[in-house]
Structures are given as structure tokens and as C-alpha cells.
Length: 190
Ligand SMILES: Nc1nc2c(ncn2[C@@H]2O[C@H](COP(=O)(O)OP(=O)(O)O)[C@@H](O)[C@H]2O)c(=O)[nH]1
Ligand SMILES: Nc1ncnc2c1ncn2[C@@H]1O[C@H](COP(=O)(O)OP(=O)(O)O)[C@@H](O)[C@H]1O
Image 1 (spheres, rainbow, N blue to C red):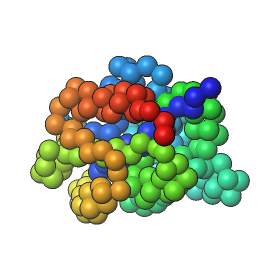
Image 2: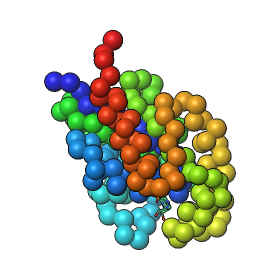
Image 3: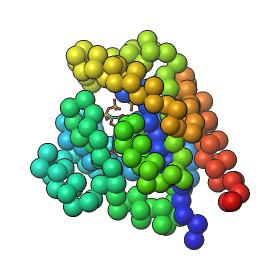
Image 4: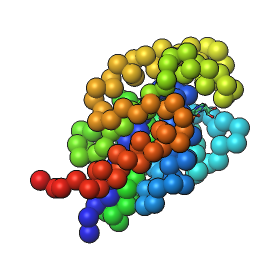
């Protein structure tokens, strides 16, 4: 059976990765979302096992030591990692999987899966990005400033990705990503 596509979606905090992924999952068939493990505290409304697997530092370390994570990274004071088995099983079953992860982790995935599709989601402007993080109301101003600084560093690494998609409107961003996935499925293997 043909293996599924491994799709990595990165982009600065507040650009709309979560929103776009959710919309994409409803529209596109045969794409599964990889739920990450994190030591970050759950936000209001976030559900364990749906948005993230929320772990203590000890639990996270144990996952790392037992080679249960495909990659992991520290981001603004918390750890995040991709559970390995689920990704491997999904791809082997011929299904596409989308990893919504930050840039350092994405680069590690690229070393292991150079055939992956790497998509970078961009905000229409940095001002709009800050408005979106603020508008979400989940982070204080100190954390927002930290995330904005990281955003500039992340955007500078965009050249390592295959596609840049602007999230001006959710529907348009989804259509662009959907088009990339469709095109990748039509590729002739060389
Ligand atoms: N490397 C890595 N990054 C992750 C993973 N899961 C989430 N992230 C990234 O960690 C960053 C922070 O995520 P989060 O705290 O949910 O904030 P948000 O992006 O503002 O919603 C984002 O860039 C996520 O894409 C993962 O498994 N591995
Ligand atoms: N295209 C868009 N236009 C306007 N607001 C958006 C758009 N996409 C996402 N948002 C809003 O921006 C905020 C951050 O989105 P979110 O999906 O949480 O970002 P991320 O997962 O990248 O941190 C949310 O309040 C969301 O509703």
C-alpha cells in the first residue's frame, strides 16, 4: 500500500495554525491530526487527548527517554513533542497526517522524513499577528512579547519550507493547503 503524506504545518504563535487545521480536518478526507504531548498548562476549553496530551515534566522526560517522541522542542518555557507510534502507524495505513509544530521540531522531522511536505503559515502582517494573539486572550503581555520575538526568528527560517501560505482568510488559507495536498498526491514518483 502507498504510504500517506507527512505534512508539517508551522507558523508563529497566533497566526491561526490551530484554527486552519481544525477547518482543514472538516474539509479534507483521509488526513489525520497528530496530537502532541506538552508540559504547557491547558488553556480554558482545551481537552486532554484532543488538543494535546498534557504531561508533567517527569512524564514528558520518560517519553523522551523511551524514544516515544519523533521530535521534541522547547518553546517559550514549555516542552512539546510528537508521539512517534501514531505517526508511523497512520502513514503505514496509507493515511496522510498533519503535524502542527514549531520550526526547530519541523527541521528535525525534515532530517528523518525529507519526503515530507513542509508548509509555513504566515500572517498578513506582524501587527495583525499581535492583534490575533491578544484577541485570543490566552497569554499575558510578557508572554505575548516573548512569542512575538520568537515569531520574527521563526519567519527568518521559512526558507527551509516547501510552501508559504498566508492566512488572511481562514477559507482561503485552507483552500491553498488543500491544493498543495492534492498536487502532492498527483505527483509522479521518480
Ligand atoms: N516541536 C514541536 N512543536 C510543537 C508541538 N506541538 C505544538 N508545537 C508548537 O509549539 C508552539 C506553541 O504551541 P501552543 O502553546 O499551543 O501555542 P499557539 O501556537 O499559540 O497555539 C506552536 O508553534 C506549536 O505549533 C510538537 O509536538 N513539537
Ligand atoms: N484568518 C484569520 N482571520 C482572523 N482571525 C483569525 C484567522 N485565523 C485565526 N484567527 C484567530 O486568531 C487567533 C489565533 O488563532 P490560533 O488558531 O489559536 O493560532 P495558533 O494555533 O497559530 O497559535 C484566534 O483567536 C483565531 O480565532
